[in-house]
Image 1 (cartoon, rainbow, N blue to C red):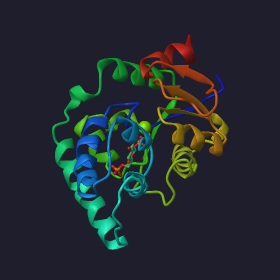
Image 2 (cartoon, rainbow, N blue to C red):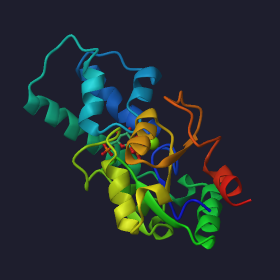
Image 3 (tube, helix red, strand yellow):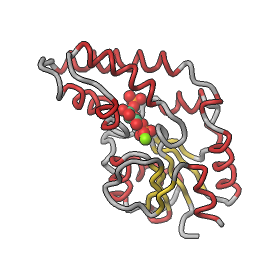
Length: 213
Ligand code: B16
Ligand code: MG
């Protein structure tokens, strides 16, 4: 087995918070008179909060000061966190839980590598913290994906070199980050990958069979 550790992206891989991000950003876009639809929302996957705001504001006829932008991002996050309170352990499927358990039983170390500053809050809502040996999130990094920082830091927390880690990602920015970290990647979902990942899987439940069987 080439890998000793697996680093999972959170949003879009272990659970789906897309609908909450979408709802929370919708109000920001309205305030900025910017168009907002599923295509714009897709571009926000894996990208940090402030960078997401800049993408939304590309479509705005208005200009905002840095202070206004920070206020808008804060308000979005308050709406988003309010929506996240609806999440329960049922928002992480039994299939995902079974996959994580099987990988742990195969002596692989598991980590989360997420751009989100809300990652720990989400994992707590899901009652999923205990599956992981390390959690590296948006509160611990200064550069978000496609920069490799979050994955390199997660590997360090696992005590493993980059080449011993496989990243599981749903977003192009995440795939780029894994490659920049010198890590193989399993792409999940139907995104338009910027390059062919080592594994292309429908979702995380297919990972144990791909690696272990
Ligand atoms: P927050 P991931 C990313 O999480 C999301 O995909 C992305 O849409 C979001 O903007 C980013 O986290 C920052 O999230 O506002 O909660 O700090 O996919 O890297 O787990
Ligand atoms: Mg993601």
